[in-house]
Image 1 (cartoon, rainbow, N blue to C red):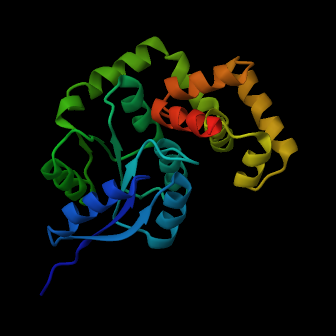
Image 2 (image 1 turned 135 degrees about the vertical axis):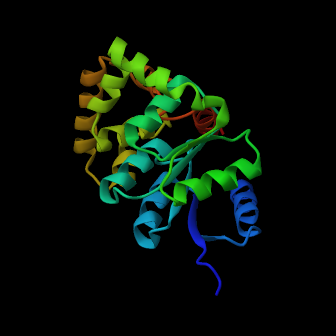
Image 3 (image 1 turned 90 degrees about the horizontal axis):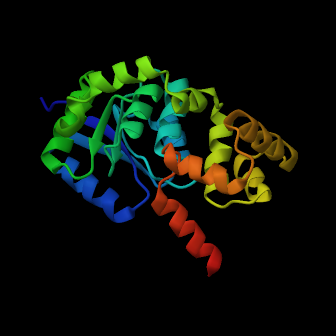
Length: 232
């Protein structure tokens, strides 16, 4: 009797990377990639529809970043198992994963063998972190408690919708585009922007963008791409 394969949803905005991840997993025979998402919003929708055993989630995605997508998925599916992928191992990113409740954090520089092992571990109900950051987790958690990290408190004080608006503002979207993308009125967008500025004590768009980059809401590569497209 053939063992049941582990179902996986891939959330990654680069098609060539998704193809590589799919091939890497499915060649093993024990995994089945049941869906692919190119934006954080698609990841949330497909996670609800497909209910995969494991979601492999990139951080830097358009419309909704991987951290916020993870938070939204876990709000509706508390038992979902999510492995976050990142090119970064900064303390800020690791702390953020812990705060949103992800099951693992894998650095993209790791080998395919480690990815396979991580997906397997998470599917079996365990957590997995890249070997290079495992030893830092306890000290990071303790350090965060001791210093009462201001940035962490600010981030947690933002609602899910405010975080969505923050990302779209930082990506260069105008109020009209944000309203259309989120299905809300322009007036509501303006209200959320004002609440963001009040909570973060930041009163200009450039400051919101810097904050979004510094706290991992978007990565520099997304902002650079947005600015270049605006110039073309």
